[in-house]
Length: 130
Image (tube, rainbow, N blue to C red):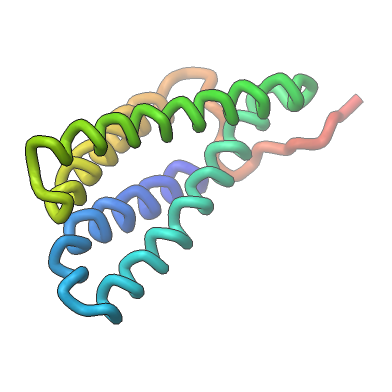
C-alpha cells in the first residue's frame, strides 16, 4: 500500500544519504547515488499527493496548492539548515544531517498512517462518485 511504499522510499533515501559521503570518492559512485536519490524523491512526492487527494478529492486544487506550498517551505528550510550546517561541518557530512531529517519524517509517517480516518493504503478512489 501507500504506507509501505512510502516506508520503502524513505529507507532508500536514508541509505543514499548515509552512503553519499563515501560514494563521492568516485564519479561513478556519486552519479549512482544521486540517480537513486533523484528517482526516489519524486516517487515519495507522488505518493504524498495521492494520499492527500484521497482524503478530500473534491477540493483537489486547494489541497495541491497547499501541498506545493508546504513542499517548497520544506525545501527552503532544508536549504537553510544545510547552509547553516556547512558553517560548522564539512559538506561531506551533510548526508548524515539529511538522513537524520529523513528519520524524523519516517517517525512522523508511522503514527500518522495509523491514525483513525487516515486515507486507506490501496483502496482509495480518487473519482467523484455521485
